[in-house]
Image (cartoon, rainbow, N blue to C red; front, side, top):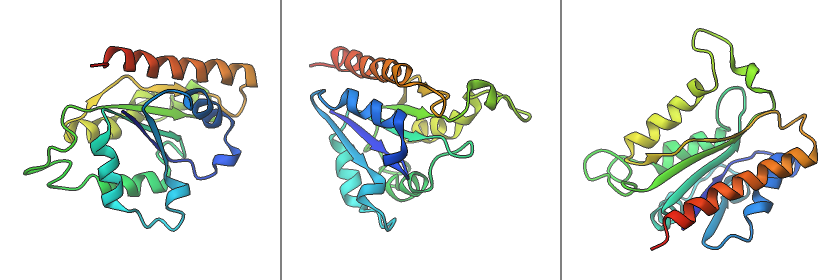
Length: 176
């Protein structure tokens, strides 16, 4: 089963993420957990989230990039759900052997990430990759859609189809 942890603070305003979710909506064995819809008060049901993660073989962290980071509710989700003794640490093996895919949209083009002492978009993936690896997850190459604010619908639709293709290929490879 593929579990998408979707964290968009303003999902009605997102053309890119909407296209992505519409493309994968008909795929079998996909569950989308929209954090901002489930937890508008930021009161995360840790048990429900851990149960959902337990059912998944592929976990997708899908969200827009916000100021070179993740949306606040997704960060809180990581802090609350990926607990010591469950996701990592002594006895924390619940996620071992599962895969994780970071599916991120950005408003700017790739060149907007060539700033600072560690330029390039890959540097922004490092904290999430380290989190995944620390929890025993297999980190897959991210799916990135740059320039979401300036893309026309045809481009967004093409990128969304590419996203769907990635998920279909993963499902085909991991069928028992």
